[in-house]
Every structure is written in C-alpha cells, then in structure tokens.
Length: 92
Image (cartoon, rainbow, N blue to C red; front, top):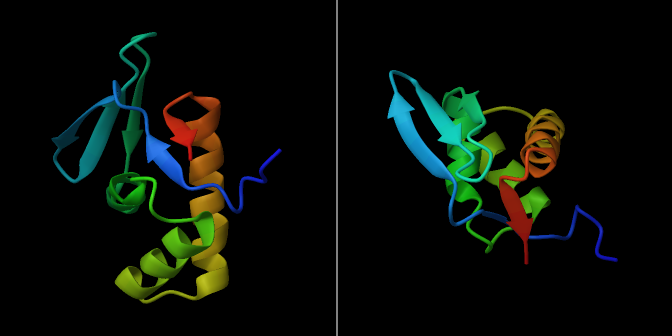
C-alpha cells in the first residue's frame, strides 16, 4: 500500500467547486454534501492535480504564504486527510 505522504492527490472529477467571497465551496456530486474552504484551503485544492506529493504541496504553500515549511506541512496534511475522508480526493 502506498503511504499518503508519497501519493499525489487529485481532485475527484465530479466534485463541484465554486468561489464564494474569499472562500471555495465544494460539493460532493454523489452525496450532495457541501464543504467550505478558506483561501489557503482553496489554494491547496487547486494544487491537487495529481502532479505533486504532499511534501510538494506543503513547499508551495510555505512559499506562497511565507510560512515555515513544518507549519505548512501540518496544515496541508490535515486538510488532505479531511478531503480524503470526505471522498473528494483520489490518489495517483
């Protein structure tokens, strides 16, 4: 089994997303469940295109927001775990 740290998360193709003010609203097309991401979460979501590992996502967030890598890694990991549990991500 591939560990989540080396997986390359990708947004589920049928997940619906739309901006709302400074947030991003995600809807699971299958269940109808809705989730709201803040601006940072929305940026992470946009980067989940199957080309980056969790570590690469964290590096991008650390650079974008000028924060320490370890903090970015923790935040990215927490969000990805939530998105996986919600069934909104698949991994390649």
